[in-house]
Image 1 (cartoon, one colour):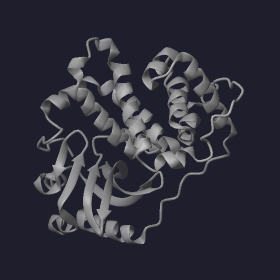
Image 2 (image 1 turned 120 degrees about the vertical axis):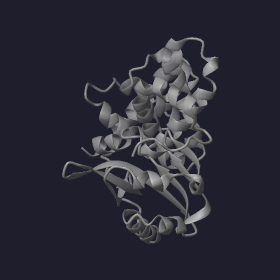
Image 3 (image 1 turned 135 degrees about the vertical axis):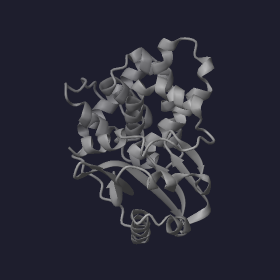
Length: 296
């Protein structure tokens, strides 16, 4: 499917041009947001919000060389807001909220970055950010201090605490998808209708004011979008149920020669048995890349 959706709301041609400018940073920004929030999908949503905030404020940036730390700072602040305003913070900090004195721990050796990324969600937000930015993204202490609103000494202390806690963590197991029979039945029906191209049937499953977000393309009412037209004329695809990080999602497969390959996820939110939000991540292949990397 090509990005032909009519721009609306947050997404316009100027924003598309801005995204092209920052395209070389987007995968790193997504990785940072995903690791901070513990969710590849939430990380993408937050990154999109951070990029649009940066787009609206781009005139405040005098030095083009400062674009990278500026974008990371905006994304970081968005992540902190997310953590503070959701149960993710309680889950992430359970058992790790104390600020006890710990002995300094040396940085992890080469090749340990991937393991660190998967485990940092168990740290409080400041330690999580400091470990990610230093041990994964190789920022300087000064850069990290400015980003998290601390000092170089404060960053060192947070790094020591975070590294010690990571070293003490037990082996982690992948989360199993949450069992929700009602949601599973609804998604089965959605997939059945979608794969039959029964767009009237799909529309009947959604509320009149259901929202649709297609990354980089559209953010508005489902009823006012050409969403189903795009799928009707797009390249060969099929939809199925899947799971990402313990969350039930839909996965769109694309046909490559004679092989079906997963391309991107679609997130469905329901309220009272009716679909009220759809988030389609067709323009974000890095989401599944990150998920497959974790599973490898």
